[in-house]
Image 1 (cartoon, rainbow, N blue to C red):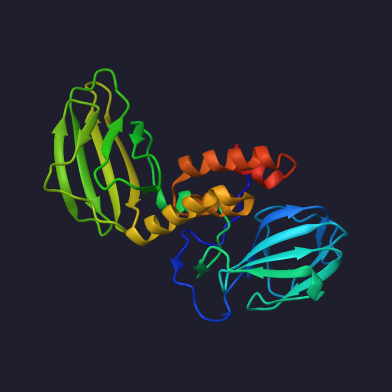
Image 2 (spheres, rainbow, N blue to C red):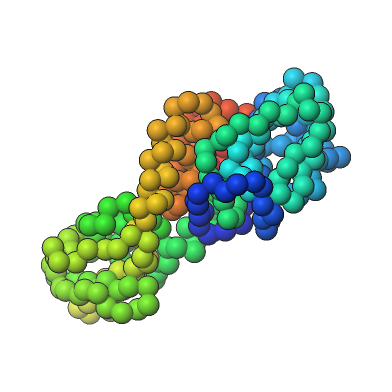
Length: 278
């Protein structure tokens, strides 16, 4: 599955007054119906397609398109027939009767919201895979008091566990014979902070086995944004897609997958949604 990405993390910040010039894409398609093409190209526009400054979208009669404008956080709905151009601030020009602007979800984005595999690759560093680390299994976790779990290994009698902060400093270490561990009451992980947990065990007559994984605790501002988007997800397709995309770029991939599958079921003809749902 090929998932393009322009950033490792999405930053949701308060809505700003007026459009602003941003680097990279200026908008993302959050709903598409009918025939829509980019300029003179033959390829059709898919959901999650990112619009670049200077792009022109051509809508056939009856086609409809909903976009999230990155610089303002507003939603723009286009209806065909017509050709619509985007400037460096995401401002749309074209037949005025085919442009409708709405307040949108109140997200003003520093960078792209398009989901993709780089988010996971940049936040989760696993290996070598001597021990299967089961939980936390994603780049981001909501619970600041996670239970650490790993696969049972026949012949292993003790596991050395260590938890380090992003700068490498040791936060906690212990040895256990179990395949799970809870942190002591006095240790609470901080939101927005990166951590790495490592596990080592010595199999007699074999070798020392070692695995490690990185994760980050979801910060309160991001959690509040997700709660708000989740509450709005029932209003329609585009709202649900924004919730799924924000889950994805926030590193909550399991939750995002459930949303992508539901969205793909609603738009089975869209290849990008099928790829995210797999």
